[in-house]
Image: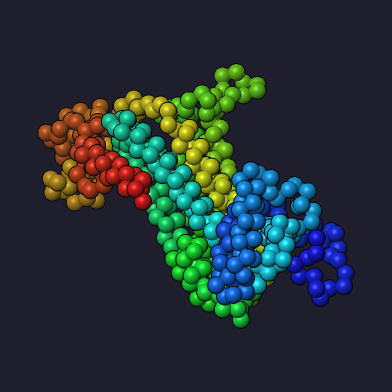
Length: 460
């Protein structure tokens, strides 16, 4: 095939250079978006009287054929990868093959620079929606688990040491909140990316009177990318999307890490269904939470994609540089990996079983409540902290948990007449009073709010 840019050259590209520079294997997934953008551009050229009605109809029919081939999985043909540089040249070649001269007219007033960015932004619209849907799916799983296990008590950890007792539902809803912010980040980023670069051409616009605002409306963009240089060279929208993926991946990895820890006999808090676990080729007793470990591992790729993109664009001058061809692979991989990891966690956790640890295993986790009880009795907090610390040390030395303290010991600490329920995990939870705490009433309120958010998201 003749290159789209070959007129001023006297020699063909070196075969190894062609192979090194082609991107069809990566950007072939933009085929449908390329047809969509090309049809909008053809409409603009018809309005600008560059294309006749007959030319436009021929192009529209050819594009319908290619769109059908894309849906059927037969475009681009596998053998074409050795010929075409990218999906855009592959589409143009097929248009010329199907309708002849109109296919050669289509690129007037357009560069591959604005064409590529338009296609990618069209793809990004759907990718962002898909990632948000996967995160919402995981949120729904967390809410369902929280509701099913609403009264289950587990230890919360700081420094991976047991800290205070909380309801499992409270812990699961903490992950819900983090994922909710992730969804909001993608929504916010999508608004900034909602600008149409088509018509910016190579870098300076075009002498052909293309109605860019109408093109933007045709493609469903909220507005036009105002500056032609910025339109074709900026990739902050890709950085912002992948940054959102990286943050979300961190949250997914944190959930996965807890599943791995909680699945161990040392924690014994969760058991995943058999279909989401593996065994050992050597040790018959093993039941490994590999799904969580794989999610934890795969999310590293998303963080790597963000570093790749930042490194790619950090020193590029305006306007377009061929380096930007390399933006799509990390962009695609970040979207795919984030979406898949969220869906895998949602599926694996859906039928997970949770177990409440023995009450004695919570050790001294209610100590803070005792210090706060002393505060309510007028003792300065630092003094209260010291007294309860001394009580804890004495009990530990004697091999007793906090609920094993005698009335005399409580009296000596200044806790005469204490309701001994405050020495238990459930009593500690029920004593909480602050907004957003682990108290049953607050957890119920949080559950109701979470379900309303998910219902609202379904109607968006």
